[in-house]
Image 1 (spheres, helix red, strand yellow):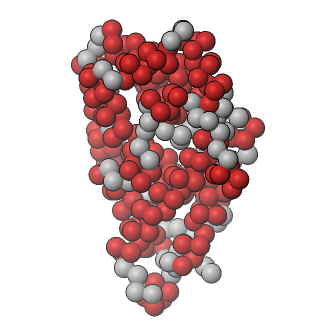
Image 2: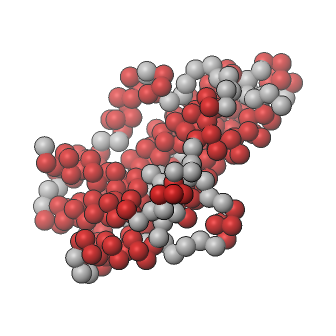
Image 3: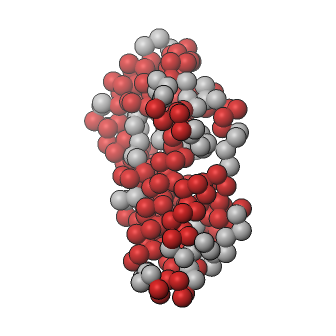
Length: 259
């Protein structure tokens, strides 16, 4: 039971490091005046949205979204522009990556890098950043991180998908159905996702030991540190409705939204 709880918290830490938990929209100026990022992020880098979409299960979620948009598009408009199902599946991939990039930017902007690293050292002990870097290079941990990247790719796509559908709902865009398996009640797909993302948890359980346990402990401290040193005022300004700046133009061009 302890190990399961530890791994669950460690997973949350990896999601935080991927920039998914700080979901806010970056002002344009922040893109050219970025703050120094925590060394924690460089040690434990997670897949970008462009990398995540290539995961087989992430691609399957994108295809589900493309199917929903194909069925929701105005038929005459769709026909006049020669848009087939493949067109909408391509659109869905493009939008998931664009939304992922958009959501990640302000998470980065809201983070105080030097403060996060200093607070991590204060909580985990002197030299803990270097220790985390050393442990991440150990073979058993390196393999765990590889498997966590695959899991995070799917988790990130689920987050982007959920927020896309919330944004459309908030803006009263008429969509026929849901691609998000939680919203649609697709238990078969939920089980498929769970099975596809269980590998790192199984791996860590099978490789218990001093190295893995210490790494997971530091990972949890990193999660707590990053959350505690983020600009909460900026984070609270965000809502999924703000994603329409990304979605509106392409969805109108592809007959999903009215011009």
